[in-house]
Amino acid sequence: MCNIHSLTLIFVSLFLSTSLAQTSASADFMKRFIKEFNSNEYDSIYSKTNQRFKDRISLSNFTSILTSVAQKTGKIKYFEFEQKKDEALEVFNLFCERQSIILTLGLDDRGKVGTLLLRPLQAGAGSEKKSVDQLINEWKNDKGSQALVIGEVSKDNAHYQFLGSVDKERQLTPTMKTLFEIGSITKPLAGLILHAMILEGKLSLDDPINKFLPDSVQLPKVNNQEVLLKHLVTHSSCFPRLPDNMKLSIQQLQNPYQSYTNEDLLRFLKKITLSCELGKHQEYSNVGAGLLGYVITHVSQKTFDELVNEYIAKPINSNEIGILGLSPDWATGYNFLGMKQENWTFTSAMVAAGGIDANASSMEKLLRILMHPDNSILGKAIIASKNTKINGVQELGTFWVKQSINNKTIIWHNGQTGGFSAFIGWVEEDGMGVFVLSNNSTITPTKLGLAYLEKLINAK
Image (cartoon, rainbow, N blue to C red):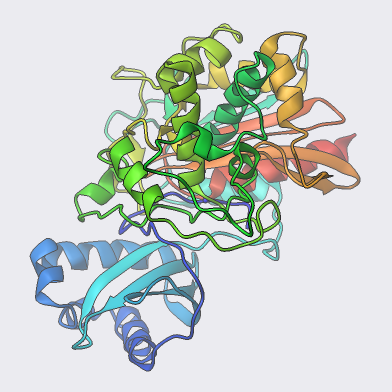
């Protein structure tokens, strides 16, 4: 969801596919779009949309959104074609004065705009490195920023920063109990549940996925190989980022996973074609994580929430991590433009991709056992999850991102939903780590988390 994965933002883009040449029509549109965007001629851009687009969003709403985008990004300096996602949609990177964005464009057969989706362009490996202090100052100067909780954790100590407000209207500082969505951090936690069930003899990383699917829904082999559980958890299963039968309206994009069911997932799997080198070709896949959730709930005959409670929440002595319902402790979510965003809800088909919620108290407890696993089944699952191998070569933890900084190993993952973002990571050799929680859907927690880990390493 590059190791930095985004699930959403306003005008949410939820698609990935193969890269083909851009069309001349889309290139011409992009040149006009940039000229008119930089001149605040939003009504002229709107005039190039088709009637179906206009039926979904009014000129006033369209103008309001693009005005907010422009305030966030500044003027667009130039664009690059990124990829063609299918016959109708093309993706462009727009490099702007302050924050660059990704634009997904769909033109109809008359050259009119039917799809115009915007989300932030994530910082890549070549981006300028900034210190923790620089990043926090940038966050403070961003008018769209809301709450930020930063926890630095070692074996015996923890240091916290509680910044901003949980809600624009209430102006309340976040606390240890404030609840946040943690998005894709759910994935490695689902991996911990998998490894605990493996230790109990219920599953194996080498189990074929077809073992758990109905006879009428069997995945095709790839070069005569079965897709295995270990392929799902290392993003090497040949699955796309998302299923192509997630047909969403503008309204549904505010909560994109709420109506995608197990039946939808099975219909998608029944007709899927797979073409890559299993176990070697890595492509980040939310549908792969969702399918893992389908498998572990099918085998256990328990809901995903029950599994999180049994294998993670109870062992760390916390009832504040899981699929948490209504509570006065919730922070209000905001998208990257600073607009209020409803909480995301998940069906069982995709909940393992990003459905877990948590607060600072539970994240501290989780980080402690991740850094210092004990002899419990959770501790043993953590050790196993950090050493998943594909084709005999250690390439990636079970959904964890592993990389080296100054000859030390950092292990981490981030998460992002429509109105929240989060990060958790640690220095393996030193047993020190950090988590960051935000009720603003931006890349700030990831940049801050990685900067903190480098700071911890350099301080040793």
